[in-house]
Length: 175
Image 1 (cartoon, rainbow, N blue to C red):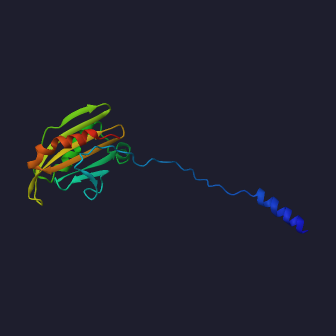
Image 2: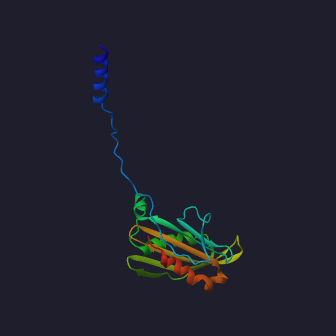
């Protein structure tokens, strides 16, 4: 009898299957690498802009910047569809400058390098908190999957000193 019970137990153990989960999972890729070249006097940092994919600065030279990615697919989820980089730039610059005192924006310069579109513009304004004139190089980069806002700034009096470096940062962005 004990042998029969043991035999029955063994057979039941092998014939009872473990239930399988019926939920199907789909893998999503979250984010992607961004490549950006910085001058050796700048380093990656944090705390400048919480939405930024990368932030950089040099406290010694008093220059700062960051890059914000806007994924085209994700923007489409909330009906933010732009037909081209010019529309994206126009929408961004309008919102960015609306509360800036004495803001002056240059005519945007558009370029294409390979499959990547770029727009750059100079922006100067008076910062009431810092009590100083600030210079920004505002850059927009369009790749197949994303728009990037590349913002680099310094005191307006140092524009000529850092603008070329800010442009090299902008045009180095790849994803």
